[in-house]
Image (cartoon, rainbow, N blue to C red; front, side):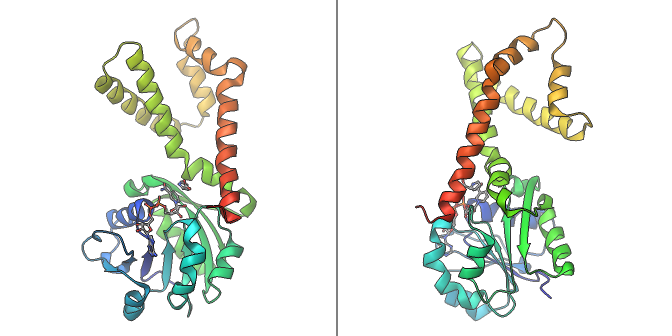
Length: 270
Ligand SMILES: NC(=O)C1=CN([C@@H]2O[C@H](COP(=O)(O)OP(=O)(O)OC[C@H]3O[C@@H](n4cnc5c(N)ncnc54)[C@H](O)[C@@H]3O)[C@@H](O)[C@H]2O)C=CC1
Ligand SMILES: O=C(O)[C@@H]1CCC=N1
């Protein structure tokens, strides 16, 4: 049984680094992690850093790997990673768009294959983490769930056909939220506020609004109605966003374009 006694993170850039920081912040022993990355400056204290598969193989003490390089690199890197992904090792993959079947083909010696979709808030243990697996035993599923749930809120997805869409929502989502906040700040500045003040107000507003909505039983849509006092100011702004379903249509297009890119990556697009 694979207990994730030691996880080898292969490619520890923005996303792998955020997850590693989250696990360490959650109290996991640094000795349970190792990194294979030819370009990373430093690994956190207590985490072994290897520069080549051969170096990692010499240590040879991991029972799980987390693939954190780019999806476009899979074909080139997989042949050199075979000995690190055989003999019962479980392969966890962050590679956007790449399917379980593609992971099975690339790493036929692995015990099981798991797609994992986090976002950068893993660093502060506040990320949704979507999981989809093939080959884990029930106790291993529980261990995997607990391990990834420590980075925020994990959930198992049953339908791989929805993976690109949940990636667009939960993995890419922070990018869209940051763009929205940035646009809100830009608009406030254009209308007369000082940027520093607008940014501070926008960030604390979004933090509070999100935390409130997460703790409420009513939906975000209903909360928007609560903000809009009858005959008040907010309704006028909501009317602009709602006109011709402008925001709704924009976001359908946004998620669609993002999810479609997953299919392109899966098909081998650069
Ligand atoms: N950035 C994000 O918010 C999210 C990224 N992902 C996925 O995470 C993966 C990594 O994305 P980022 O962290 O954004 O990219 P990144 O470019 O920041 O990190 C990639 C890392 O891979 C390393 N690398 C390159 N060649 C390597 C090799 N031969 N062996 C080992 N490591 C190698 C690089 O040095 C770098 O540290 C992608 O597959 C992406 O789809 C998934 C969810 C969210
Ligand atoms: O942009 C990407 O491809 C990755 C996947 C989700 C977030 N970042």
